[in-house]
Image 1 (cartoon, helix red, strand yellow):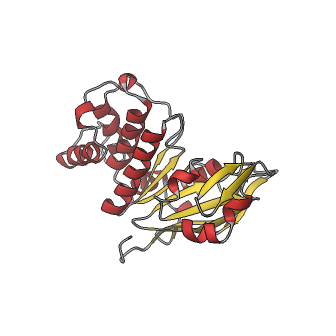
Image 2 (cartoon, one colour):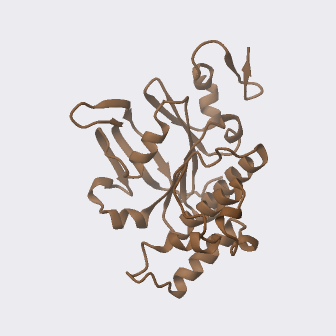
Image 3 (cartoon, one colour):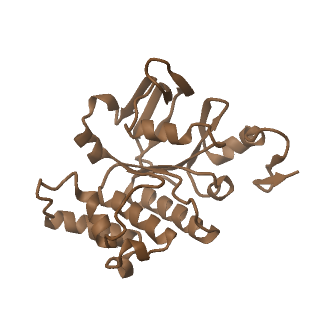
Length: 262
C-alpha cells in the first residue's frame, strides 16, 4: 500500500489539451486529475486518444488550451524552465541521444539541472548517479556504450537518467514500446518499486492495459475526449474498459481481467 503520508503533487483543474493557438483543436477537455506522492499511475486509451499530448502538457513541453496545472499547489505556468527541471523529469519515446555515450555518461546527464556551466559533478551529484544506477540494476553495464544495449537495457538507462535528476515527478511516454513481455513486466515492476521506495510520483502512458491492471495504484483512462481516474478495481467495476475500444471485435472480461477477441 502507499504511504499514509501521501499528498497531492501534480493536479489539474478543468484542463484542456490539444493543438493550435489561433484555431484550437481540442483533443481532451475538462481534465481534473490528482496524482499523489509515492503513486505509480498509468494512462491508457486507444491510439489518438491524446495520451502523449496530455503527458507532454503536464510536463510543460506544450501549452494547455485551457485550464490549469498545479505542481505542489503552484501553477506550473509560473515556474521557469530551470525550476521545472528540478521538479519534473521526462522520458519520451524515441528520445534522440548519442548512443556512443556509456550508460554512466547517459545517466550523468540527469544532473545537468544541478551542475554549473562547466558541468562539473560534485560528490552529491556522483552519489545521485550511483544511486540511480543501483536502483535500475545497471551496475554491470555502466561502462558499456548505449549502442551495445538491448532495448530493455536502454530503457532502464533512460529511467536511471530521470532518477539521477532526482525530481518529485517522473513522466514516461510508452516506456515499454518494442519490449517483450518479460522486459515489459520488469520495467513496470521497477517503476512501481521506485514510486514506493523513493516516494516519487510516476505517471506513464501505455498500451499494455492487462499488464498494469495488477501493478499500478491508479489508472487514467482516456475515452471519447474525457478522462477517468481511479483504481483499476474501481474502473473495472464501473465497466470503463468494456467500451474502451470501438466496434464489437474486442471485449473486456471482468472475471479474467482480460481483453478477448470475439
